[in-house]
Image 1 (cartoon, rainbow, N blue to C red):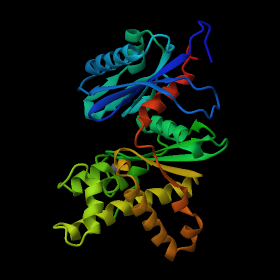
Image 2 (image 1 turned 60 degrees about the vertical axis):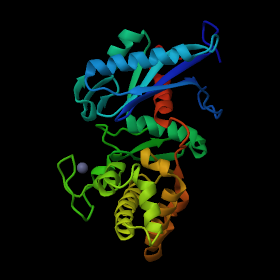
Image 3 (image 1 turned 120 degrees about the vertical axis):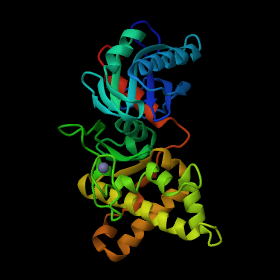
Image 4 (image 1 turned 30 degrees about the vertical axis):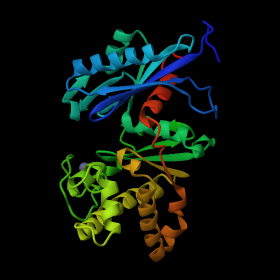
Length: 326
Ligand SMILES: [Zn+2]
């Protein structure tokens, strides 16, 4: 595929995390293409607080990524950014990026003015959902519904129906981490008590298991070994975390009924031991409930690819639709 200048159109994707900003350059995929995503360049830099620093850092990252491209690789046509906070994806403005102390930033227009390219801004979980759905093979079937369950600092889901993000009326679809049904009744940053993300998230695991970082592999390991000094505590913490994640999966199953549920976010890098623990909990629930058993949830679960920057790739794919892009 080539644009009017004859060179391959490329997209830059930027994923704003809690501590770092990561970016990729990919070849713009053809519509409905099942070809592999080709990552041509990758870079990252630490995230700094404040709106001005954010725009400076994204601009510098775009520059570093462009510099990495070999001559003749193609022409960057658009930039996509996935960010935490309240995103207005039509204007590209973002409010309340709490971890960077930002109350408002006109992110798309500011980066566009600095880089000279059209910019699309998307909620970070939605961007990761787009990336994960494209990278996990099941996501390529037309007409499928895909849920992406992000186990990061918080717990949230992105929903894709027939290739399109479901945003709802006010971008609240998928905020299932704030369903207040967790029995410990811990207070959540949102002001409620008992939110699922107070137990079923990477942030919760860090709070509940201060002995190791990242905590989840250590929790699962200690819970497996009776002679571990914190074994009993690990069994308890594992039960708390996995129950909350299984609750979130139950919620997705009965509200969205997705073909596939992709587990992503930092905790998903735990890999197979985490997937096994979640599947086991779902099987136990199915043993006492014919209703849950018939949903066949263990078979619907997948892990997001741990070796690819899913969020940045999804952000880049989101830039496909920005005006003046390919
Ligand atoms: Zn909450």
